[in-house]
Image (spheres, rainbow, N blue to C red):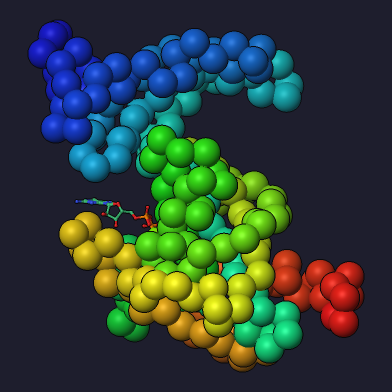
Length: 222
Ligand SMILES: Nc1nc2c(ncn2[C@@H]2O[C@H](COP(=O)(O)OP(=O)(O)O[C@H]3O[C@H](CO)[C@@H](O)[C@H](O)[C@@H]3O)[C@@H](O)[C@H]2O)c(=O)[nH]1
Ligand SMILES: [Mg+2]
């Protein structure tokens, strides 16, 4: 078959070859990729991959798995150790709203997709766009697959100090892309309490706040 958007002719975002991801993988001799089908190329890409997997008892089995590919992302915890505050975002998230969240308004650390940037460049861009903050040095914290059974995305986690002087813009996100982001400053202890009582329910945000709590003993004046 030819003339398939995203496969051999450009789709609405100019992409081709979207069915090729994974075909050449050889790193694991217990895995043989048989086929990759493009099942959807909307904003992001959904594939169905058929592969053989050698089980631990040596028997081979054939599996099909759907994989959602939206690229990699980055996120950052902005903290003011002197005032014991953190700077977060609040915005509407439809996937949470459609899955039981009361109003879909989620508190999160600033985050975004890398697009074509390296993780540090991307997170500086997102912090400026979403929080209106110009950050100095950022520290790499860790990198994590957030939903490895179905989503390819790796998220690069960062942390950086901020002060009120670094709040050089208003933030809010890119209105032309439909973003409407409230900048929310919280006392760190309140943020931890909000994890416990369910007012903070975003995974990356919980990870970074708990990392910051665990690191307290190692901080000057911690
Ligand atoms: N039209 C359209 N635009 C979309 C769509 N999906 C994403 N976008 C555009 O892509 C932008 C994504 O904004 P980012 O700031 O780059 O990403 P994010 O949604 O805030 O953060 C994502 O990345 C984090 C880290 O990787 C994730 O942790 C978080 O869950 C989230 O998915 C949106 O503002 C929007 O313009 C879509 O289906 N349709
Ligand atoms: Mg974002």
